[in-house]
Image (tube, rainbow, N blue to C red; front, side):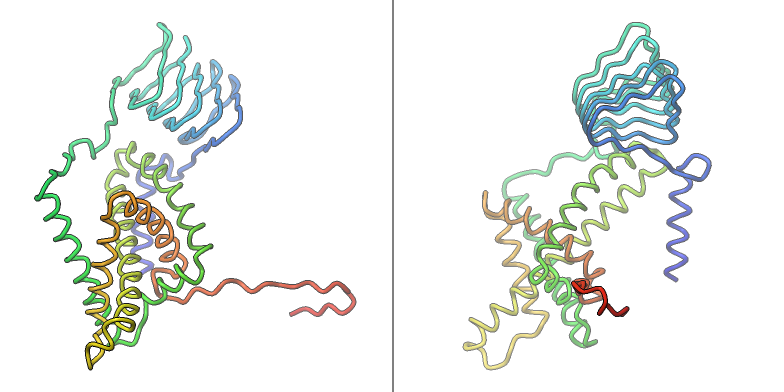
Length: 315
């Protein structure tokens, strides 16, 4: 069954790729100059640095500018999306797609050709989402969401205790015991995901995958919060509630109580935002390290080389 879903996802990804193969050029720093005979296959992502496209050069896909400087004087077969940075279109520049600008600075010569439309503002499907109302209505929505998350986490914890599995414990152990690799992996994920979402959102065929990937990220974060809430609830029950009640609390109630308390800490002004940011990075890496809680993370063994190579034995 898993292979079928993987094949389906791969097929869906290849539907949005030219010639069945997706290729891209990532530029994160430095100065890069592409001459008149250069043809770059696929899309180009510019994060920082300076990139020059000489007259006669060609980009087979789209260009996404998230920072840095782009001096384009060649042909762009796709769109040119500018979110930040500086873009200068030369007199020989030709864009067969749209010019989308939502930030940064864009200047173009009078003879630069744009075959598509010039769109100002972030033309993504999320533009129509209105801001959530404030006041008591926003507080009520937040409270309902917290209670729903805590309830689902409590049901999951109770179910796993009956089946004698521990996915929540595996995630919590990876976050607390192996916090350094969890934080590193989570930080890497938060750096890559926004770039990936932006590139997918500007591709019409891959727009549904943006929402799917966003849903997966939300589920990963929810799993991490529930895992940490379950551990917090167990600690509270053992330290404060055990002397009061004769019978220990069930895993479902401890998870529910700990998740509600943890979400309450996130709602604190200033401190809660910082705590939420640090926890999100840590829990994202912990969920990935534990493979969504299916395994207990164990760091790779350290190999110590013998100083005398004559006594070395192959393991």
